Amino acid sequence: MSLFWGNIPAAGSIINSVAVIAGSITGLLLRSRLPKRYIEMAFQVLGLFTLSLGFFMAQKTSNFLILIFSMVGGALIGEAINLDKAFSRFSERISEKFRTSGESVAQGFLTASLLFCMGSMAILGAIEEGLGHYPNLLITKSLMDGISSIALSASLGSGVLIASIPVLLYQGGITLLAGHLQPYLSEAIINEVTAAGGLMLIALGISILDIRRFRVANMLPALLVAGVLASVFCK
Image (cartoon, rainbow, N blue to C red; front, side):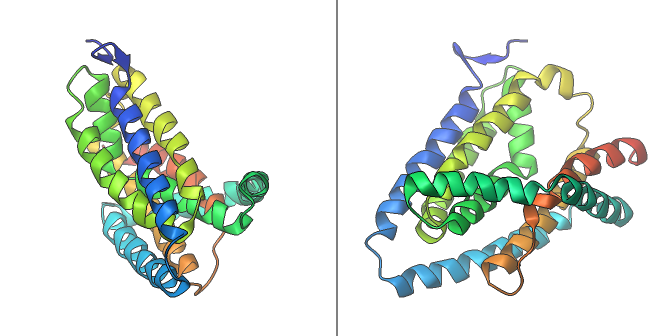
């Protein structure tokens, strides 16, 4: 079955990425016009929303041992690679071009990337289009992400705009590989990966609210570990 919708490969992911860009630009324009106290309030609400979404996603797990071992194992791998340092260097380079806070760029990029990419809608939508169907899920997700990116960029800054890149690469990659990935991406695997992403969002929410800073980037390998463990133990 064709991997194309119309004549454009991964069109749903392209639309999703463009929606994030449009929403982010809108949010950045609003950010420059809003008083600081409004931005701070939006920032706090965003932290609470990220926490609540993280708790919701974490409940997708059907095996808490898989969730625990994937998070611990993934975090240890991330610490060994020191992904957080790589993200910091990346944000510093971006901040030099945008002349803004490096921490804000990194936090905005990581928060938006996890919010937009982690979840069953991103995976199932990409597979739906990859198997030759009309990308209903991704178009719906594009509308949701576009609206969300307005609030995200208004509170977190230009890093949200850069999140359009992993949205395109992540979902587009799944779409183009859907025929090969579909037999392996069972509901159990998607749920465990979603649950691991949920715990990361909880950590991000706590960081946004300035309760405690977590090196969330170092937890990213847990997504891969969760998928591997679920494929082995969730039959």
